[in-house]
Image (tube, rainbow, N blue to C red):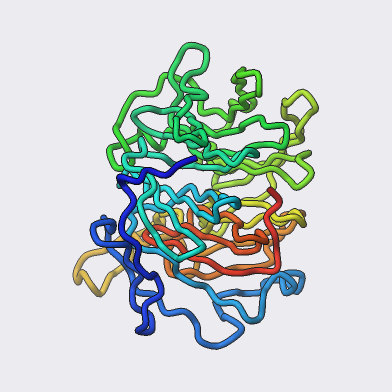
Amino acid sequence: MQDDTRATLPRRSLLQAAAGTALAAATGSALAQSFDFKPNQRYPDPAVMVLDPSFAKYRLYSSTVEQIGTGLRWAEGPAYFPEKGWLLVSDIPNNRIMKYDEKDGSFSVFRNPSNFANGNVCDRQGRLVTCEHSVTRRVTRTERDGKVTVLADSFEGKRLNAPNDIVVKSDDSIWFTDPLFGINGEWEGSKAKPEQATTNVYRLGTDGKLSAVLTDLVNPNGLAFSPDEKKLYVVEWKGTPNRSIWRYDVNPDGSLSGKMKFIDAADQGALDGFKVDRDGNLWCGWGSNGALAAEPVDNPLLPGRKVYPLRGRSEDLDGVMVFNPEGKAIGFIRLPERCPNLVFGGPKRNRLYMTSSHSVYALYVEAHGAV
């Protein structure tokens, strides 16, 4: 797999000498506001919160949240490539994929345009598999020589909606969600009318056959397997009172059964992308879901007028919520921006990379990614 050298920008250090100076990307690459971030100087980092004693073993005492890149409009779809030490991140509204290189700390453009790439994953052969969630509306694979292969762009003769998040199972089958986000408006691509009657979860077999394994969820989003791959977890963005994670049994033939609501984001948390560690814990991107309160209130910034506030404060919700295999919240990592997705990376798969609105953050933990 090759990066687009025409789009790669000059290297620069991402750790500034002055305390807390913003990590802007190289000249010309910051197509949105960059934000200052000052890491916590003392250990342990108070941003890493223990909600249950069982989480304490996953918190590294001498590790703090770091900002490794900023200047994005909506950071999503992180994928880690262990062979190269790369983290790829989608910047959807800017129609590009960014690359963070662990070897030198550079943060540069990997692909531009990206066809509004959203979810990305590194497959078992070290290739990039991407959900292009608007305009092209397809799933592609970037071969090692840089050639792009289209894996799926339609189902039963009709175009896919907007492929969103994606995982690769140990049998090399590819599973992805297909909600409407990429064609609902102009912000993350181009508005278009859906051709599919439902928003599905698909399985693409090694034989090239595409199957709709779930058709009853309204805008399915993030998905991940349990460590033994006997369970599949899927976020439902809408269709229940709150965003939810559903759990399914994975049958030997690739079908799903035993639907059970595993997590209900009753605190207005915006469940989106998530990953599972080797112990079966779910590390979930979290933040305000934007829901408004039922009644308006006075606002000192607008005297004489009432304003509908959010249900739940973003400052209290932005970060990563960790649930154990029984669905109990055990830990929280507070971030200064909403986190829609994350991935485990680093040579030991114990560095948590968190794509968070305008920026990308990292934290070493005593947990390891399951896949």
